[in-house]
Length: 444
Ligand SMILES: C[S@@+](CC[C@H](N)C(=O)[O-])C[C@H]1O[C@@H](n2cnc3c(N)ncnc32)[C@H](O)[C@@H]1O
Image (cartoon, rainbow, N blue to C red; front, side, top):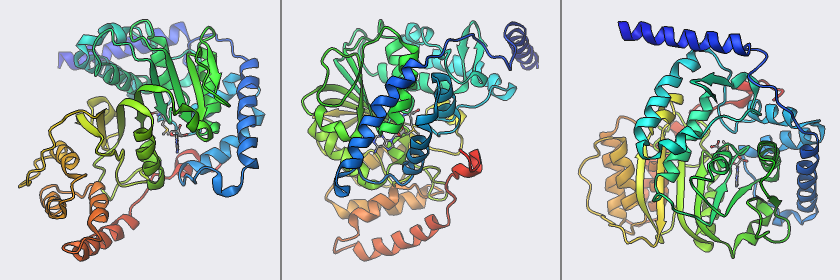
């Protein structure tokens, strides 16, 4: 009882302090937004999009079902932004790069828990956590001063991802190149750059469609005036600390030694063709680790923004060395979405234990066993696994559809697999996907 009241009082005091100092509506800071940065980012965007437009249609990048409408909207508005504030506010509120929300008591109430969880989970990285803070340039209405530093709800989400990635490496590890695929407006990249004195690296490469890159370039340049940025057009600038790589220039990264490839909340929203594309791409480039945090184990009747039934698909050259279902903070922020966090190492001599499964105990168990059998040639093992999963979990994870497709042409179980797949796909067709226009209105 006492604890309950003391927490309430604490939140009230924080809110009061915030209002007295800053005023909720007028925001936390007086910030200077740039007109010049918009010109630079827009110029890069225009060069690449004109180049893409001149190419024969068949050689342009594949369609992106979910993201193409966003790219079209961004493309229409990019010429109109007068300064970085307009661009940053737009991408943080109208494009679903993440779920940043307006500050309100229900959001603030959670901060104390997020702080505790992160400090407990990453006890070895307290210094890394304490030097993180939200960007002064982020959408004003999402910002809040909590225990002396500027935060937001989404700040803790990205802080979890950042801490989780760096904690997989030994202290003082110095990666040469970090490569992020689909980095949105650059929130995670900003943490790496901000904490460079703790987790040092040579360069950070952001790979994305040119429309999203426009916002990442705007946001990061606005946040860091002394970092050396480069936009990849012809060849990699070896001296650049941050490189923006549009999808059409991916081939230029071929000769780069990449330490880690990162993907968060982005593979999940790509159609299967793109998952296969990246399966081959990560095999071809000289990369050592891959970190992914994307949907995994979503029930087929609640697929959210999913555009595929399984990601990331990795070849047998990679071993899964760490996995976790639904990290606490992610779960607290999106309770109806299931996430899988994975860390892969190339050519790691892992234990590929393909033993028969008798029972699936829980979601985490499903996830761990899934990775042990997904590359097997033994179709009976897969078929048994599918049946046991459906029997033991009280929902059907979407990855079951991926496995059924895999064995659909095998002589023994193919017919049964297709029958089950058809039944489940019928269920999927009735599923409600996240509807953007419902959330943001038709003008987003
Ligand atoms: C939901 S946002 C995630 C942003 C960020 N990773 C985060 O966790 O906040 C998805 C991102 O994937 C990017 N994306 C979509 N299709 C892509 C593709 N084929 N290759 C690279 N990035 C892609 C989008 O432009 C966007 O930046």
